[in-house]
Length: 75
Image 1 (cartoon, helix red, strand yellow):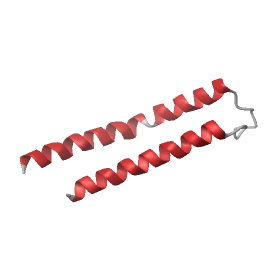
Image 2 (image 1 turned 90 degrees about the vertical axis):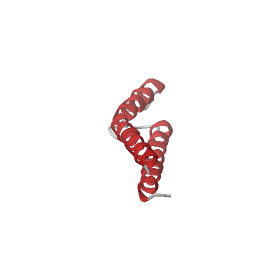
Image 3 (image 1 turned 180 degrees about the vertical axis):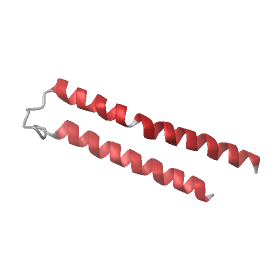
């Protein structure tokens, strides 16, 4: 496997693990950092903010995938 594919997979694994950990923190906490008790609505809002924050890494990984596929086909 080419080095660029290995880096792509490492990057994906990193982002998946990070997303999973942050999602678990959001859903399992009873009180946030400001002392507010977390209701279902507040947890959903925090999760939506997390999703929005992960759009940029998702776009970067998708572009990186396209570049890797095109370079693999040329060889």
